[in-house]
Image (cartoon, rainbow, N blue to C red; front, side, top):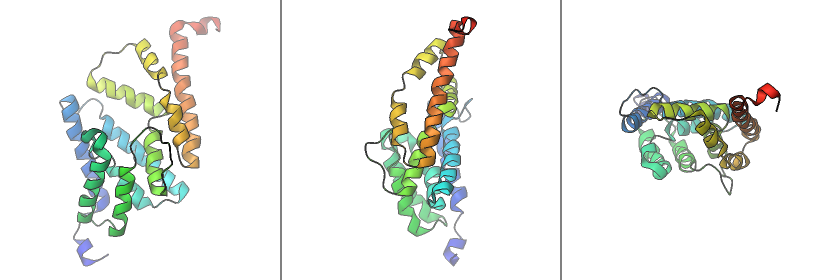
Length: 217
């Protein structure tokens, strides 16, 4: 560690704080309060962090690059479809002000730039970008997706019937494309299980509502 870096803030704490502040700003814009009943963005980022760090360990990806990219991947989410590019620009400006290794900043920015989309026609090239992409998409599958989706709707105060929930959940053909687009072996295996669990959840709910479990149909 150089003398200059000793005087700089810890990149991990600073990046986490930057993301948390961004989720507060997003909540205020979307829900009119900094403390909604359910802060979807923060729940999403925490889930991505858990998955990405496990994937980094399993695949041998650079854990510093992956973790920095996770904390900052949605820091500019309010920019909509431009948020990957804006988030990457933020990382390039922000990380040099911390003790993050300078030589790893560009790979972080590239991973952030490349995380957009629910499926891909071509795989990403670098392992760290693959890990971020896979972790981000895994949160959109399975029970995690179901409960975070419900939480977001509740936070918005949206009225929704159980039947409407099932209809919406069944309209998810994109999820199969997501599973097929994952890069790493652990993520692909988990994604297949998550998609099966997601589909079973709504099928079982429909069975109960229809009373089909009374007759065994």
